Image (tube, rainbow, N blue to C red; front, side, top):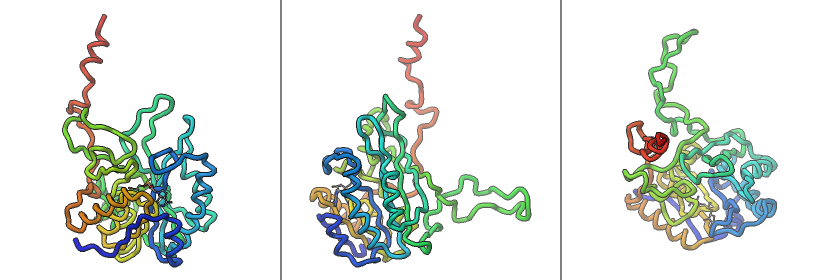
Length: 307
Ligand SMILES: C[S@@+](CC[C@H](N)C(=O)[O-])C[C@H]1O[C@@H](n2cnc3c(N)ncnc32)[C@H](O)[C@@H]1O
């Protein structure tokens, strides 16, 4: 495909934002460092972590156009076994900066670490804010197939008429986007947090990649072709790929040169039509009751029947 405009630089997000004109970006979409001690961050206490990011939050809001949106994807900061849901910490800052929350989207994924002292965590969130009340929301571009397309009103004036929309249903605020099962041997799969895992077609050398389709849904719903999408913590360019793939212009900043290199390679492949991404709206694989992995293992049943 021929790519529209893009710029992906090894640069500090704050420095880049300060060079952008006010109200020039339609969508800021990102997943900031979570302060969990990944290779690209130094873990600090939660107050310092937030305080360091606040000047950037102000910039993100400044560069957002009036019809624009900000999608802030986070999980938990974990300290000494205690969890601190980051969206709860960030919400008051964005609210104070005048943004309006439209959805708190739950991104649910089926796998991850198995906890022993609390329930295993299986979701993260995306706070979707708009700058004003007059914002782009292309619902028809992100509708998904209805579960019961043939459903009809069963009472009232519309009785007997089809109740759904021929274009599909609203994808709602709980999104299932996770690994695609590419290999048959379940046991051979290695699950690692987070959610673009080793067997995912998009998996690259980044510990916290999010799936392109997650960004794609936001790009399609919240921007129009030609609009600028900016990911300040771009990692391996997942949001940039989502934007360019859909004829938007993309800006990204990332401090780590290795990730920038991988991201640029990804964009180059997109331009050559050789980039593999998990197709948007593809169903999540679930085992059938007859699959080997869905059976109670022989070892357990034998043990249970031992005298
Ligand atoms: C959670 S990861 C984002 C991953 C990304 N969503 C993807 O799919 O690849 C956060 C990224 O922010 C980068 N980063 C941290 N501080 C930054 C800063 N001040 N400016 C630009 N990038 C930064 C880190 O190197 C890391 O790759």
